Amino acid sequence: DLPTRVRIHEVGARDGLQNEKATVPTQIKAEFIRRLADAGLTTIEATSFVHPKWVPQLADAEQLFPLVSDLPAALPVLVPNERGLDRALALGARRVAVFASATESFAKANLNRTVDEALAMFDPVVSRAKAEDVHVRGYLSMCFGDPWEGAVPIPQVVKVCRALLDMGCDELSLGDTIGVATPGHVVALLAALDEAGVPPSALGVHFHDTYGQALANTLAALQQGVTTVDASAGGLGGCPYAKSATGNLATEDLVWMLRGLGIETGIDLGRLVATSAWMATHLGRPSPSRTVRALSHE
Ligand code: HMG
Ligand code: MG
Image: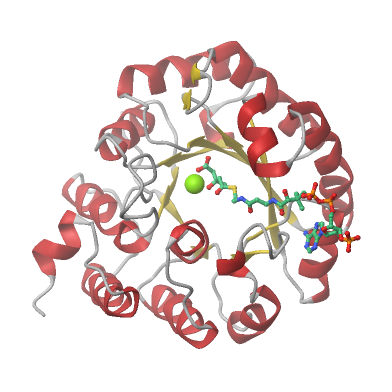
């Protein structure tokens, strides 16, 4: 059975732009987010309040957020610690996301912490956010495979998911950070999570498209009852010179499939394609999305 409606969590301005070689001017980022909202996206991850040296592409978070905060769309932002939360709350953010790892190697590389130390870092972030009635998403990276550790055992993923939910996260997003998942693995993980008391209704899926599996994986997740799907406009992200890094599932490719299945998204595909084609001119490379290429006439 498929859902009748899917909520798309747009991550192009954050996950996409954090990985682009070119640093995009703040005004262009703001226009990008406005155009995404205009195309019908209702959840648009705007930026990250992380250490500016770790992600220089998003070092303008303080300047960007006020340029878009009047939009009716929900604008979640990433916060790794209390310092990040303070910065986000000071600008009036109403949705934040912490980001954990299922593997020790990536926890170290991404957060300079062990898995448990990272969870301890998030704990006060989540409780303070909840006390202020701020919505909290908990990302979990490396849910399928890890570049240093290989295939990630399902019980290891379930354990960190439970910890994030027990901490008070309102929803989780299962990240296939390096895009190695295949549909059978997705079904197995969702079944194990359901058994551990983490139902599909608490989950979003976050597929990177490195091996071209993101859309197939998404369909498998929808069949298991997931209704929140992360995607990035134009399939933004990744470095054209690095083999292991590619963008997320392209929002346009997702919308094309959902439309064909009769699943409501509220997105104007023409406006979205035009936005990604416009963004591609600023990034100096064509969009990797097949749907953007098929539907653009420039
Ligand atoms: P650290 O070096 O261990 O930091 O980094 P620290 O806690 O030791 O603090 C060192 C200094 O940084 C201090 O300054 C802090 O104030 C400052 P000092 O006292 O020395 O002058 N600092 C900050 N400044 C501004 N904003 C902050 C902040 N925090 C500390 N928030 C840290 C630890 C977590 C900060 C660092 O590792 C970090 O920023 N990491 C972020 C990495 C990141 O953003 N990765 C990408 C997002 S995750 C992702 O893309 C995956 C996802 O898409 C899902 C998937 O695909 O799997 C979500
Ligand atoms: Mg990601």
